[in-house]
Length: 112
Image (cartoon, rainbow, N blue to C red; front, side, top):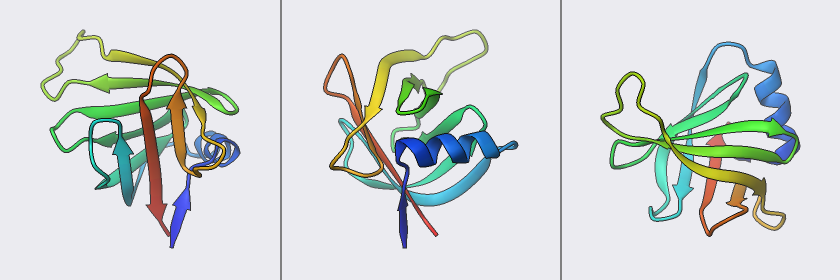
């Protein structure tokens, strides 16, 4: 069974989670086909590895709004991630979020 990360559900799951928790699922990000992933959640957001070794990070800043980042595969201490901007949930696509300033979209669905 797939569980979608909706705005309210993500807020609750992130608020309750203390240490990082990895759950198997399906992920997508603009520029990549859908792929198997391990979605890691903690009190500040979620992350998942991309097929090319980069990491997508999402930080919820309030209900139904968060910030997205790309971390390079070879990122070192002090290296800043690429900022993807603010994201909001897509109403007719549960588990999917759209950037406000460009066409970047990500989806994170985990298996229960």
